[in-house]
Image (cartoon, rainbow, N blue to C red):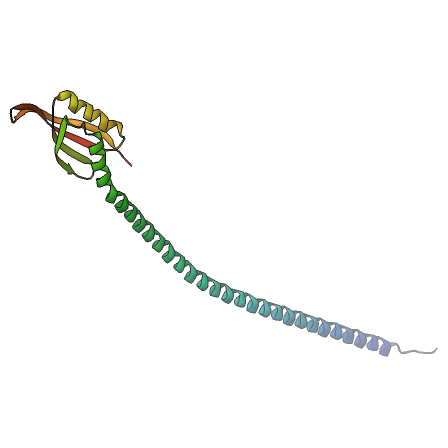
Length: 181
């Protein structure tokens, strides 16, 4: 009988399997290492991109903050100018108001039947004193002043009869409140 030794074949097969396992293991380690290095590079690039975007956003925020500060200053200046313009318009209106009121009183005056002796003014009212021939003339004068629309109300404060050079006249005092503008 012939004897064949098959032991080296199994040994060779075992070595081949262990080499193959070793190659697979080393290949797997290399692939994992390449994947880890690639992932690390990707994350580094992403981090640097995010940092650059953050720096750009901060720079834009600074420029916008400066622009906003300029805008706030502009708004404050505009409010100041509007207030100044309002004051100027009020002064301009008040400058001619006294002359307009005096013209109004002279036009509403019933000629030959009444005389104004005193006028005084504060912010919201005007006090008028004068003399008239009778109460009807004073009443007509008050109605005429109310009809102009310049005054909210015209009130009679007092009316007394007085003798001037032997002639009986009515000495009157009116309060005229300006209408709201």
